[in-house]
Image (cartoon, rainbow, N blue to C red; front, side, top):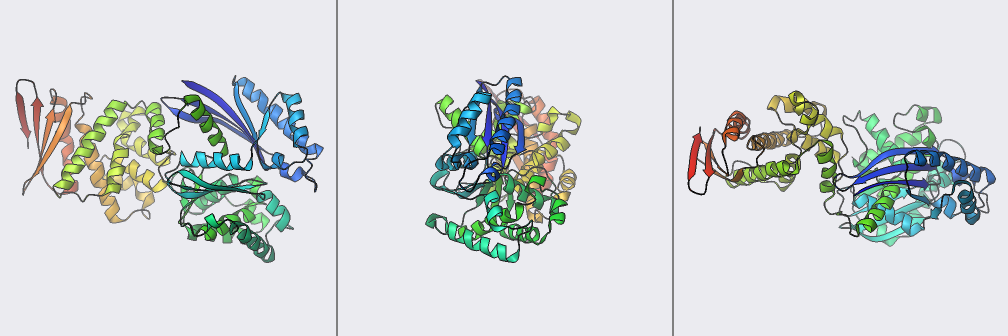
Length: 520
């Protein structure tokens, strides 16, 4: 099944066209993302009538999007309008005029629908099991609370970053008095929802203002990898950045790397909203999600077409499909390497060679499926390509720190190479964590060698921990010549990592006999 679909999101601040491509074996991929800053909220009169200039701007923008949609030959299209149109007293007239001019049918989302679609995107694209989502647009702010990826509560506040600026900021900079008034207002609003207080869970923020907060923080910290999806900020980082932004004048904000020109005048109230919500929730951290309303709309449609829920419990597995597809990874071979790596890990921990850690095992399992995926680009430099791709590519269900750990394990070539790759991250990991990554990387490199013929013949592993040596016994359903040659070359990395010599015994499983080969 293949589906090409488009979503037009008519927000209070921006109007955006996003085109998606979905394949069963690959998953959903965003292929186009085009936006225009319309600030439709600003065209509402005191009686909430949208002025003619705003309606014309909307129609002109949609006519431009229509040409792009026709170029891509897309027939599956949904157009969703949020607060600016929803709050407009003449919304019926707006929809009718758009229909006449463009033949587009606009659906005005209810507050509940807008909150739900954001939640749906978050639980299908982040590892957060329980949390608070906030999607702050120009004219409304949607908040949800979910537990174990199940929606519990949702609410839409009738204010957004554009309306807050209009109400609380007289000029281009948020003054101390205006900030105090805004804080008091937000405090009253958030505490009107008893289910928000003291939840002590992460906040997952959606939308352009949250994206800009993440981008600015990364620029100020000279962040060593790419991407803001699933970027994590501590309370200290979030509040410190808020203070810096509020202290800046307009000229300073214009020079601030990571801040979009169209958000210079609204970033200060936006940062105050995030911090006030953080305090109300007593949150454990602040996470940005690039996936939001538009993605939720498409996910819901896919659920309807597939007549089954998409698996939100295993977000990483859904992302893995796309990696397998993009880098021509054979699922059977990846599963075999994962099987061997798991068996080695269990046996080494049972023998006291490694200390068991559930977190380490999960990292190893993820990295096992992606070992040396950089071979797709160039076999001679597959280790380097593997680390760069995995460290810099957004992987749903994996936070940035774990992404770098997976990259280090899956690209393992030698201790010195790993040290070189991790040099930009010297403040991220302790010496003990780096040693653990080295052990896991060496184990995975050895596991990879045990499928040298790509025939998936290793069926069982045993390990005997003698006083002076580790004996690894490998049972194979077929000739092991390729596996023997590769394993003998690669066992040295594992031996150095665990500080014990290793001998290998291959037992060839046959119907009529067992052939035993021992390599010391």
